[in-house]
Length: 81
Image: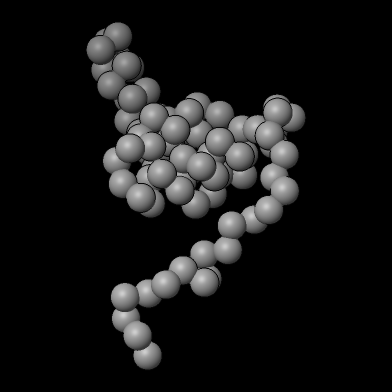
């Protein structure tokens, strides 16, 4: 395997790890969490995932304390019942 092929394979693994980290931030490797942080401006779900990734990084390294969990169940829906 050439150097270019190894690098391409590494990029694909990193990309897959970042995708897998979304929603499972507590078990994601640091590299994947950092990749999630890099996509913060892509959309609202990406921003929320980046927020969870930042909280997880802070929890692991002791510089962020979570005092309140965000409750998304009370988020208004455009569909009224």
